[in-house]
Length: 215
Image (cartoon, rainbow, N blue to C red; front, side):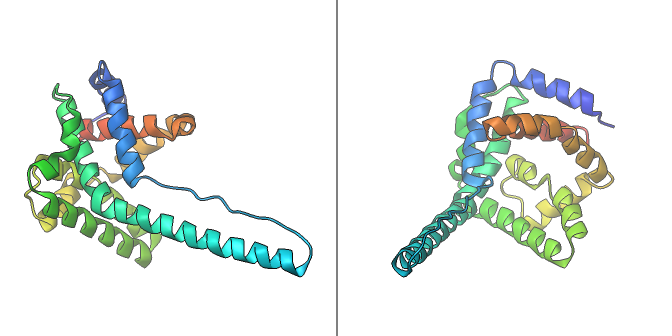
């Protein structure tokens, strides 16, 4: 049985001497697969001509935002998934004493891009479908599929059904503990939001890898 305090202590030891490399890996993953916020643009005025200009500006802005979102989605699907698994591979190796940023391209270098891409894509589709069914089942499946990227990092040839099945077995009886683990980082997340939440993301990645050794 793993303990949160032990996992955090081990994660700190893993980061010693490799913080900035790990930070860069987390930043790359965040850029290609993280959340993005778009602000609203508002303006006011009087007169028909000004109102027309405002309407045209809003239309063009909405179109540009749509294009940006579309590009982000494409990056997330075709690049972000693979880099996410590569990032897990980096942290797997970091926990074993290696620190090579080239592991980010692990799936591509091993010519396993398609299988990794397909497995991660299907994982996302399943999560969306479960969430559309009901929110609670979606959350449960989110934690059930939590280990899929780590499984792919260890074995990029594994089929998507087997990867999801293994992740479900690994997290069986552990979902609540993982949820509490996430809550224990709430303070870190709020503080890390000043730096795009990268520190929380980095630390949590290592924590999940360390926890994998206990399950």
